[in-house]
Length: 484
Image (cartoon, rainbow, N blue to C red; front, side, top):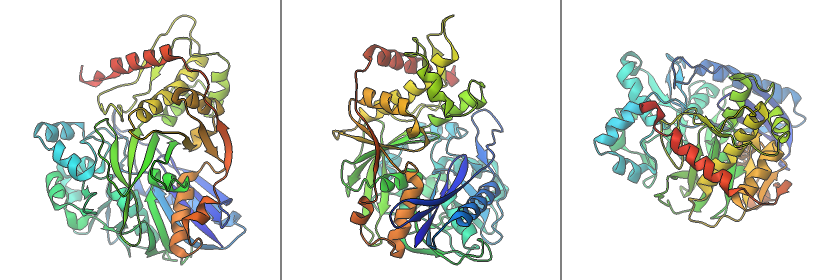
């Protein structure tokens, strides 16, 4: 008996078949195209995401040695998707979470004095990162799509559930809803006040349902001939928190993916931060009880390594970054601020731009590779330093956590141990855990805790404070660059 977990990420879709012991029985993966129509714009074709989902699931199921009982879903958050609720056709590309085109809308609303109220209700900031301002941009620039009779609005989870069910269900969960700027995290519902502010028709938004339980059912005619319950779903970072079994207040994880995201479980209290962290819903029980988290969001980390590969051609695969970086003792004075789509927490500067400082005639591509890994560790340190809770260990996951050098540098910079689990695809694992709880594969969270296994623990060593000071200086120089 197993769970099919679908992880619809930013650059591709992963499908895992997860057994009762928490081990991965089989997997499938399919990339989809990234579209950059203008500087600062990032788009996906919704049909590409759906086709990648079918391909990844088809591969994972063909390789599985066990019977799948239910489906769990996790997804890139904040991305705005528009589709026809009847035909399921998407009239335009989705606007991805990394997209910066709504910076002007954010500035306008901030100048009008709306940000304190928005933060009070949502735990978020006025930033292009979030779904609400993307939808405002669409309303102002694509009125035909907005006026469609069967308009459906949502994030990637809602779109995929619509496709999986043949249009039978239009739903989301609180972890995704709480990233839209439209959801009142204290009331646990869409806010008419916020929908009016952002010009979003509340009737086109999905129903908000708990993160696990009876959510929907796949339609065999639309999803590989399968009739299965969709019994768990969550946004990718909250799913990773669940997959790391961070069930207790104060538990912290960092997912190293396209971006990196540090989340700390704050329990039933929606803790407000004045240090650049976001207050978000972690998950909701079928009883309605909400668990909250504080989050530090870094937009570009793994994407910086990808840029070394695709943009500069310095490496052929992302994995080569570790070997190249190890070939030098340090970054040789080079500092790379990977603000390629602005800066997230704790700075929140959409006008920041990528900056490389400290170059000399002796600088090599190895120094730049090392500076890239150092930058990721520095960014995570910046966030952990703002957390009021004393962090004693960081649980690491995601593709970047496979880089031993990065994990050691991270432990050094934080001054605490970093623990990497055997299963590093904890985003998909969290979706599997939620779905399994919802369908009875597992009955308690204690059972889930017993499936977590340590792969490697990185103990902290000495850290170079002067190099970190250089990082802070470089960050200050990257800020506001696009406004000059």
